[in-house]
Picture 1 (spheres, helix red, strand yellow):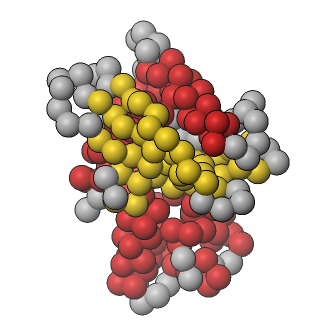
Picture 2 (cartoon, one colour):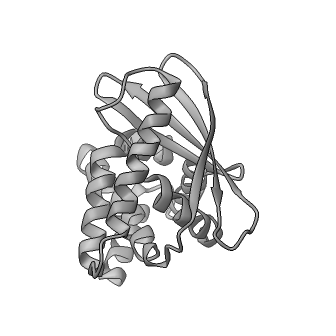
Length: 205
């Protein structure tokens, strides 16, 4: 269902990584851009490691994700109004399963990295804490560049990516629509979504 989005985003996450660092200056366009460049270097270093097993690749990418992605903010937005219907145990399990979904989806595809490169185009401030960093991804075969916007949030702990928009396709909205449809088919019960994510984990294992 999300095949087209996931295939496109695979290239982007390879190049620019997942997320956040405490090493940059807070609350500036320059800091947000430097943050993306730094995480890109970190991600590519993992991919360039020779003879990295599939298990180790997933582990390295998961660590980047855990360190840098604002999973709770994104996961809560994706779940939408159903977040308030869930109890604490369901919320925590959902966030764990959501994180595993993202990490597993892209870890399986990262071995197809073909040397794409990215260019920082510019950054604009959205509000007091958020910046939209615009990038372009260039393919080694000379195909058309892919336009990507990264929503970066500054906080006391550094920066974090809270959304990715690929050619105007919004990552969080895409997941929100898919998850909402699963819950609706389950009679509005979040357990329907948790079961679907659990089964995905079982099938992947």
